[in-house]
Structures are given as structure tokens and as C-alpha cells.
Image (tube, rainbow, N blue to C red):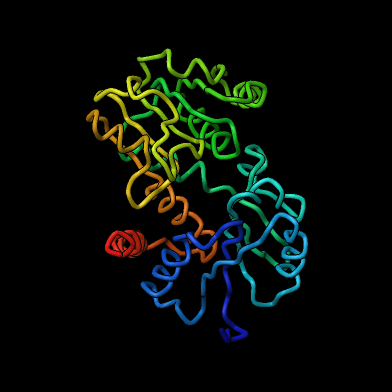
Length: 279
């Protein structure tokens, strides 16, 4: 693909990225605001061993303007950046990088995407929330939940990592095995990849009730195992597409300085999902 030298290139880097819906979402936003000749968003598969070389290319390229950073680079990318904003520094993970006056600046919009997705369905203040997992996504989400004054319990295979998060942001850290012993959570958040592709649930279906909000940060065109079970139980469900949209809107605003066109971005995601379902 030939790209004009004046075009600002935004890349999503990760491994894998072929499945990413971010290019469709962002390019639709550029077109909606008449920025199609100024910006383009492309996928770029970058393995862990290639990250250093890729970041060197980003720094030296006159075209590359910004990055969306996905698994497995959200923490590893930090050492290649010149500066972090306060939120990214506290969370310790970056999903957004912008070149500002030749310097690479890191941001985290994951927490914003998760919290805004939940707030569209429920009031969070004071709610009891179970978070499954203790990885970078869980850390970002718990950071956001702490700002909303939620009562958080993390269930983690790595109890020490979970405890690190709760020691910093508040809440309790519990052993993974105890996730199936609590029935009174207002919200359940799956921040693991369990059930993304298959039928395995991250917790027993008996833990889910119609009184709960169930949020899975993963997205699957056929629904994740957890959300399918939650729908069956009559719970309110929030899927990873909503989080992808909302964190992407915040990214767009950082990239361009303009308000994100929500309708165009949402329609682009829905069209991709509907097309995949039709195949």
C-alpha cells in the first residue's frame, strides 16, 4: 500500500492482530469527520522479539503518528517511551502511544473503556464487584473501580499479583478457588481470557443471577461462554465490544484532538460482527 508522506499512520501492534476490529472502527471515524486523507489506521503484527525493532521504526518514521498497543505488549512497550501520563504511570500499562513533538507519550484508555461501559448499565458507587484475573487489564479496571468507590474482590490464580493490585488500589485479593463461593456480588467482571473462544466458564454458572451485571472484557461474534450463560440467567450483560468502542473513542480523541464520532465507530464494529456472523 502506497501512503502519502503527509498521512498520519496509526498502527495497532500486538500478536496476534489479524482479528482486531480497531482498524475498521478508527478508519470509519476518520471518514465520518472528513479525515480520510489525513489519517489511516492499520494492523501490524509484532512479536515480543520484534518489539524493540518496531519501536525504533516508530521513533524514526516521519509517517507513524500513533499506536494502539494490545497483547502482549502493554507493559513491555513502556521502556521504549519518553513519557507516561499519570494514569498510565499508576496503572503500569499502556494501550495508546502518540508521538508528540518527536517524543513517544504513553496513555491508558482501557480503564476508561471498561468503566464507561459499566456505567452505561449500572451505577457503580458502593457496588460489590468481583474481578476475575489479575493481569494488566484487571489492574486497569480495578484502578477505575477504585475511583468509583466500589467494593472490589479480585479472584486470581496468582494471589500475590492480585494482592499487589488491592494493596495499591484497595479491595480484597482472594484465591482463585474461592470464586465459586460468593453469591452476593452486584457485578462480575471477567478479566481473563477464559471462555473467549470455547465453552469453558471462568466460574460456575450457579454464581450468576438475574440481579447481576456481568461484564466480559473479551468479545466473540457468537458471544463468550460467560455472557451466554449470563443471558440464560437473565442477567444484564456487557460485552468486550462496548469496552473496545469506548476505549477506542478516547484513543481517537488523543490521536486527533477531536471529539470521537460514536455512531460511526459503533456502526463499523456492528457491521464487522454482522458480516462475520453471515459468513
